Amino acid sequence: MPRSRHTTWKSPVRIACAYLAFGVLWILLSDSLVETPARTIQSVKGILFVTLSAALIYWLVRREMKVVRHTTALLEAVTEGTTDAVFVKDREGRYLLVNPASAAFMESEPGDILGKCDADFFDAASAKVIRDHDLRVMESERVLTELETLTFNRTTRTFLATKAPYFDAHRRVIGIIGVSRDITELARTQEALRASEERFRSIVQTTTEWIWTTDIHGKHTYSNPAVTAMLGYLPEEVVGMDSLSIMHPDDQAEVARWLPRCIADKCGWSGVALRWRHKDGGYRWVESNASPMLSPQGEVIGFFGADRDISIRRSLEEQLHQAQKMEAIGQLAGGVAHDFNNLLTVISGYCEVLGSMLGEQHASRPILEGIIDAGSRAAALTRQLLAFSRRQVMEIRIADLNQIVTDILPLLGRMMGGGHEVATELASPLAAVRVDAGQMGQVLMNLAANARDAMPTGGRLRIVTRGETITPD
Image (cartoon, rainbow, N blue to C red; front, side, top):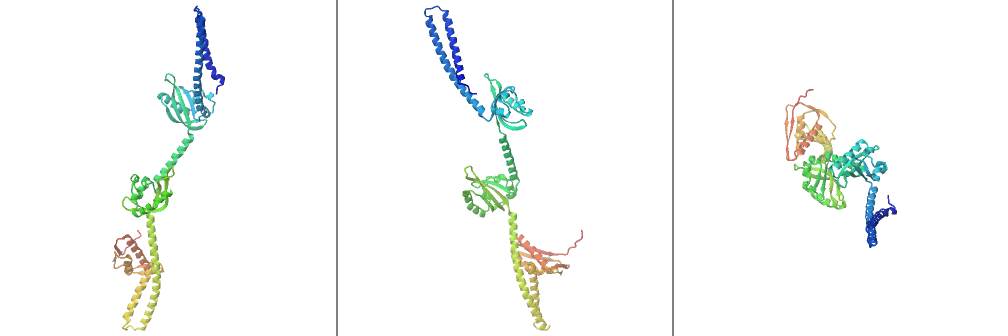
């Protein structure tokens, strides 16, 4: 509360007047006991000295009280203007002083709080938390800062309380002085942030994608455990490693070409296929995605990325491409075989007509039979090609498996190419089978193609036939 102007000078005047009255009374009483001609002059001099001294005392006291009032006003402004709770307690925990912020939380007036303890306002558990903190401060005679979670009128809030021992003039602890700040919202935000960080850490640690960060020079600054399954390195082995040092040489040149542009444009990349070197020396295809990491000034300081292993997908794509080529070849072969078969039909027809015109003993009869036999073999070859192209209708009949293998061997040899050998072990005798000869040839062609792909540097393909007895067991 501000003091009136009358109050500001009243105390110094009282002190000066009391001193003046006491001094004048003392001079008059002491001079009355002395009978000298100069007694009156001495009294006047004494009264004048006391008057001047009283004026000096008034000036000094008023100046000091002005300083005290100014300091008191500043302290009142701080304690009443702050949103932090400021309080003073005695050793028993009774409040000696509270500011409006303290009273507001307790939903009381400051005057109603003075002389009471925390148990009068908080639940038993909260009051014990506060009292234990107070006791630790008084026993240690040190400033202590602790979190206090308190419940008042079924409302729970968190405070950051800093308390210091309250000393008397003889340095004896007579209570505590405290400042408490409500950090409930901050604590909730920090807890939400901690939970979010924990979720993010769990995702990064358990995902099968390789999560990484690099600095502006391309050195890895972080790696999650997925790198071990993908490239064979431990995360700590990757940290500090130059990313280009484990990249395929062809990809190094490509990355070195467009990476400076990403830094200049402050952009990342998406869906880029790269080859990383595995710890075993081989390479793995990955699909790389990354975004730039920016400093508070907006400058690129590194990259954050996630790479997915696509080695299996690339292998399947290559197999699909090869199958598409084989299908195209089969379609071409089927078309050629179909046209060739039409020509063979004409040739065979003419041969049959010519055979009916020539007698059995005609000198040209062996030549004609050679043409007919060659036509038959050519027809068998066209049937194989049509089966390969899947343009032949299924024709199930009793057939000799050894003969099917023998007939298709020349085609297998040409398909396998140089560096590969085709060998056969055909059982004899071998029971006949009921099968489509063309489809069986297609099966052998597919098996030979797979064997060839499995032996890129050359090898030996062995085709074996034998009889097997299959029982219900």
